[in-house]
Length: 291
Image (cartoon, rainbow, N blue to C red; front, top):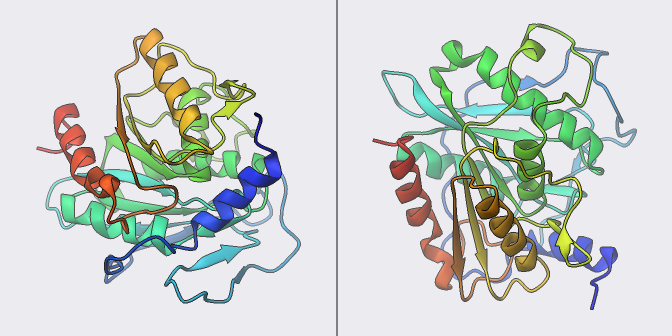
């Protein structure tokens, strides 16, 4: 039976509640590097939210929920490295209506730093999908433009997305060849193709039993790791369909499917899926991103 769009949206918003974790909240990075706006003043394409950005009231679960993002940004958390480090752009989830900014953003950056990877948290426009897609394309280009300044390896620039951010990341990795906006400056002359992709409980990949039409599978998709659980009943089918499509296209990919964990756990699970960060690190070693 088809699950209504309203139900799916509600699932993603509820996923940022963090109610299912019993372990201590992972630390956030102690220091942040540069925070920069994605777009020059007055040149942002697409929709702009007229409402002021705000943070939702705390629900006692230690989740920072940001809504009405009209000025998207990147915040760089640099890995301690003397040579250019791998980097990942982090796309938090929240049903395209908000962002679980710490649980699926800054906490992920801290974990990536522990691996020697620079974490770059993307605060993309919400609500809505079109502006968010323009934002993630621009984010990858800006990271490549600033690679030397940020001490990152532009050939080891990946993305990691959670829930709606996972859908956004999958959409980018299958739609990078055409730009979603007219070129503005030198950054837009650079490729927005990520070098590798990690999707953690991605949402919205399935529509009416088929792969969502905006996910356009080809042989040129970057190596992809998918993390999901069988008990994420609203969204696991989309990951299964995407994995099968990647296999058929002979795209390098790995699907880590766990029995339990639900949806929206970030690094905060005590279920079977709690080992996903270790599996992800192993995969990055196999790819040669980590040594």
